Image 1 (cartoon, rainbow, N blue to C red):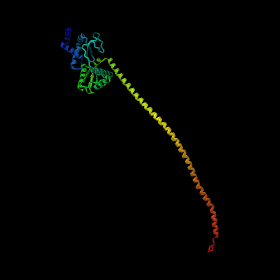
Image 2 (cartoon, rainbow, N blue to C red):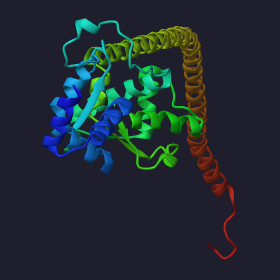
Image 3 (cartoon, helix red, strand yellow):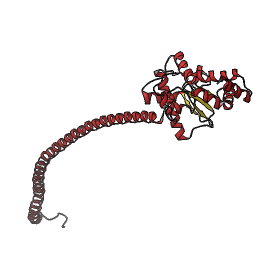
Image 4 (cartoon, one colour):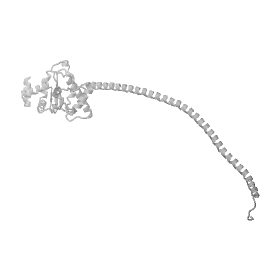
Length: 320
């Protein structure tokens, strides 16, 4: 086996040290991404030259390799691991070798990153390397909505969390000191899709939709209760208004009767006043007529008496 390896290395002009360095890096990090750094760029280019040799060597350990030529990364999977897009290995099913378990915070963050990546993928917000940009604020909101969790408040714990995901080549962060700034942006790599399958993502989204539906039902029920209370209040207002109208009608009838009585009395008084006025008006007229007639009757008598008296007077001394 060693002789075959040495012959292949001689063909490519590489040494056994170059081969060991590449294997150690792959087994240590589990991934080599060309655009991560200059070192990994050299290691990825070296892998392209030794791809068949490394594949044969790692197959003896039950380790499978995922090589994405489009996005230029190589990832290793331990024996028996279920890899999205790859056929399961029945020979090593149940094996636990070369596995490193993730803690709850890491698993939660990976799930949310996968959901954010899928959302950006549907919207076409993917760059040439298959990466998407996600703000820390949007990531925090998505984590609360999907998992009802929050990112670690402690800066040290938060740095350790993102450093682990950066080591797995799932994200790229320009400056770890800005992890408390909501305006900070991080780059999510397409390798995230191999960590979370579409089935797991769909189940996660279904749970969120179910929770949203339950919340909507609760809001609808509370709104219905408020509507019922408002309806009862409206009914009470309508009953009060009806009672007020009924009382107004009754009061209106009373005032109408009283008004009619007052109007009748006023009419009677006006008739009586008219009679009184007409009587008073007639009395002065009659008195005037009587005085005129009396004066007319007395006037001739006085004239005749005056004429008789004039006849009785003596003649004038001057012969008039």
